[in-house]
Amino acid sequence: MAYVIGLTGGIGSGKSAVADLFSGQGAAIVDTDAIAHALTRAGGAAIEPLRRIFGDACIAPDGSMDRKKVRGLVFADPSAKLKLEHLLHPMIRDESQRGIAAAAGAPYIVHVVPLLIESPDYRSRVQRVLVIDCAEDVQIERVKQRSGLSEEEVRRIIATQVPRARRLEAADDVIDNSGPLEVLPAKVSALHQRYTELATQARTHA
Image (cartoon, rainbow, N blue to C red; front, side, top):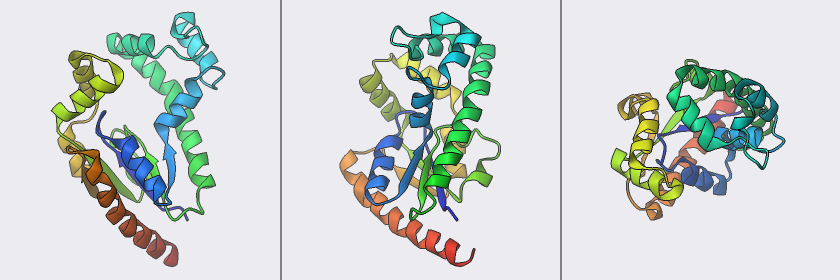
């Protein structure tokens, strides 16, 4: 039986960096952001449905989803956001389940889901919830530096996600990533040992 850790956190919290470190420890990674990118790149399974729903304007010249245009559309129109979610979320979930099934032989699986807590059935999908946490001002600076978005745009994205306090309430484990990246490996290593033990126990009692 697969032992699944749900890894989540707000934008700019450092989820990808932490997932990479878990991968280095031998965990399998199933990342919904990576799945979403695969679905919406040129030739991806979501491209033609996106074109039917939103028109050619949502497709970039290279054939991928035009992320900037779609981001602006869903922020301006809540009904467009719902249409996008109704299209992508079931596709992402199906691909996630396939990825988890394929990785069942790994010591444990880290399932990276930015909107995990927003999902009403998330507790049935994972054995533990790991929240990557940092202060909001740190989130904003990180996202501005990597994406070129303005502070206002980043704050609008943060406002669409569950509040930090609610994520922390849902957490079984928390990694504070407000500081330098150099301190992350030791934190991940400690949790790796814990998760390996828990996964072994779960398989023993299955």
